[in-house]
Amino acid sequence: MKKLLLILAAVAGLSFGANARGTELQIGYGGYTQMDATDMHGGYGKVKTAWGALTAGINFKVLPNLWIGPSYTFSSSEFKHADANLYYHVIMLNGRYAYYRTNIFKMYAHVGVGADITHITGDDFDAENKGYFAFQVSPLCFEAGVGSGVSLFGELGFGAQGLLNVGVRIGL
View 1 (cartoon, one colour):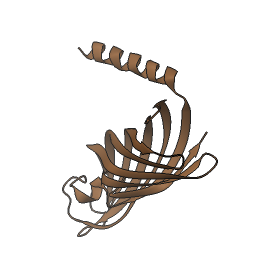
View 2 (cartoon, rainbow, N blue to C red; view 1 turned 90 degrees about the horizontal axis):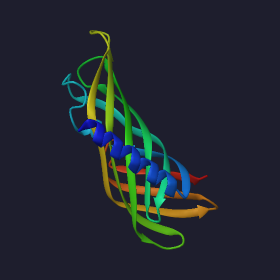
View 3 (cartoon, helix red, strand yellow; view 1 turned 180 degrees about the vertical axis):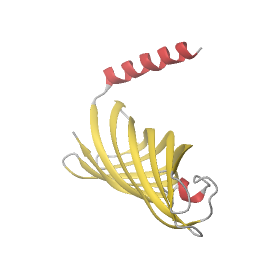
View 4 (cartoon, rainbow, N blue to C red; view 1 turned 30 degrees about the vertical axis):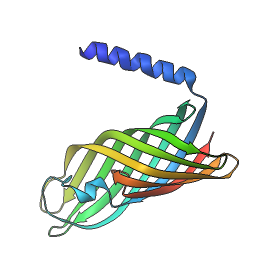
């Protein structure tokens, strides 16, 4: 069964790659992430400070309104009652579907799934890594073109990339 699923995924990937009509790089910042809102730090205590998440990704246009691509998200925070730091490394596969478009403006939905590796360091214990399921669900997203191949975006949702994620996309 695993082999069949892997073969189906490979065939689907090849067919999407054959239809790809565009590539873009994106970088964004999101606040209040899944990692800060849920216990993705091994139950060591409450999070004291968290600055949000920085995300970089590459997207491939596979259909006129559908983009798919991988992303990497980095975030960190500190524990409230311990001298310890958390470092979150998230790898996700993202999909974006535009449900309203004009020449300059787009509204779209964004979904991502992947894995989070939380690296926990502290003075009172040995460093350790923990793995968690990561996701992003953003049903209300906006993108506006500001120049030749450059656009700004804002996404409202919840997940590893933040409650509100804003950034820039550059077409290649």
